Image (cartoon, rainbow, N blue to C red; front, side):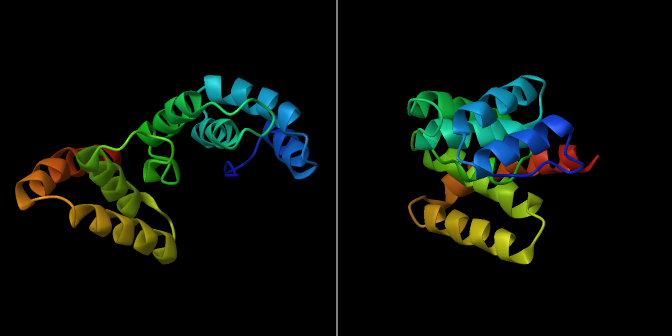
Length: 142
């Protein structure tokens, strides 16, 4: 699960519940935070839906929460777990993740995954996929 910088009391309670394997409680708290726009909580909700912890497994719900967190620039969500396969979209999210991750190890992991996707694409597709990712990176840098 992902942590939020400067965790609120609610976030701390959610992590404590998850550590006790009380995923239903963690989910209730994280959904509340996620609906308020907290990207880390959106990612954690996605993880629980993806794994079926605390809730019936629901890959469609997981994909929706991963997308919301990814669109806010949360790099772990940009790795695309639970999202139907679309090489160009996968490349875009991995390009963003490679630019957003905090550690070199995480960035390298995203770059390796992006490069594996690129092996299945033609150069024109890579160029088309790179444009929106670069635009979003430029917007995030402003």
